[in-house]
View 1 (spheres, one colour):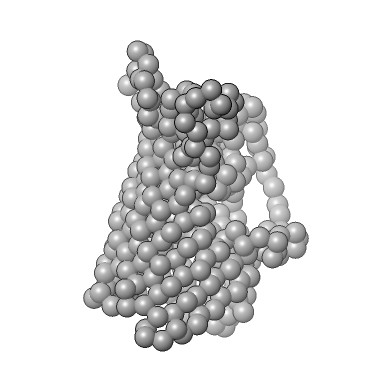
View 2: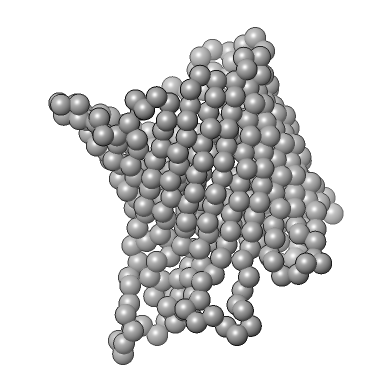
Length: 352
């Protein structure tokens, strides 16, 4: 079976957005800032300033660094996008991003339940973040804690009987990222823990732990990129079942990429791969996938560019990843599992 789709879409090179931001000098080296950023679907105009879901923060900065409150990127997401030649945009976006950001069974959209039900993969709401000051000789870093903002119930006669109302920690995130950038070198390591589910009556807590390491080095004629990533979906039991309970599910991935400036243009290429391990059987073949992407960007001016990208995903042992994120098939219903997925982007980027 073969399925194809042609569409006029958006954000194949940079994500379409519209935002407002400002800074007030408070004196003594202090400054207060705000940042509101909304996604835009400029192919149909259906999404605009109705939501600032991309970023909504207020902050206070000074010689101590920056304290930032609101909805912002999770520290562990930065390595996935900064060390990707395609910036996790379009059909060229690396498979680490695809596999972590989208539910491998239902292909739900980002931030609504990616790998292991992790709704905090790319962004976290209700967060408190701290960023190191920029004058540390190339060292940089951030930490973040995001509140779950769910009711927490104690055991008692008035505790709701419906376990779906007693998710006391689901949605919580804690993580950090630290790196070093000096001249052509940039390297960073990140770790994050997100509570994906917490059922009081079942006595279980599901968590997604992400660890990644990324680096880039600009030689001039070519800039190289690389990343290693590991995500683990684990379940903790208040009283572990005699049978041992559900085993952890692991997602391991890596990325190799490069960019080559050519006159007014830029050649981009990457190879990424991921492998799932449900730790059920030593004889079971682990689902895995790899992706090759090649693209070119031609800058017509500082604000306008033409771009083209081609990418191909190859799936093995039941993996079901595609180049397009939310797919046009239902893997959960067993419609079919794609062995390969190929995509093309041709577009124009204009910034103002």
